[in-house]
Image 1 (cartoon, one colour):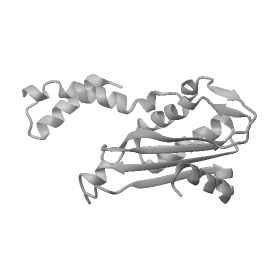
Image 2: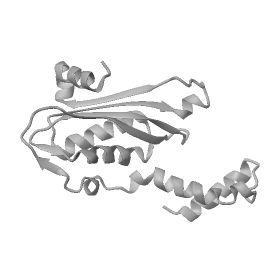
Image 3: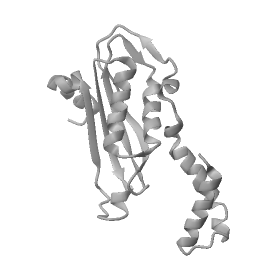
Image 4: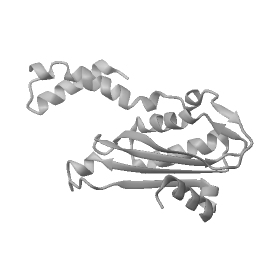
Length: 186
């Protein structure tokens, strides 16, 4: 990522918005925006295999594993405005489990891209399924979108919920119900 080029483009944007990029409060804004975008899009430059880094462990269990309330912060690809909320993950292992922090890191990796919430939910569930060959995976994201809250329809209390279920979470209503009951969305 070329932060110098992005800084120049942000400076040009400030001028197009009728702002003075030399004004005291804006002098370093182009560089700050470039650095912020570098961080907020770092998921493009993260390798999921390296991120997991061997934190998959043999464990003979067939009990559901759930991590809920993982914070999600992303940018919608339509307006480049933030959306934020919580991600809940459940999976049924088939002999291998994740180091728990890796689940949150996977959420961060995929959310640090220009995103659609629907795609984000699918990417997380598929990555989990593929990484440990789980019997099933369920991912549910509840998020508020600033593109809906501060522009357009201006609905401050709206929450978008997306769900991706694969394997036994898709095939078994009982498994889905257990997942939803345990994350508190039933």
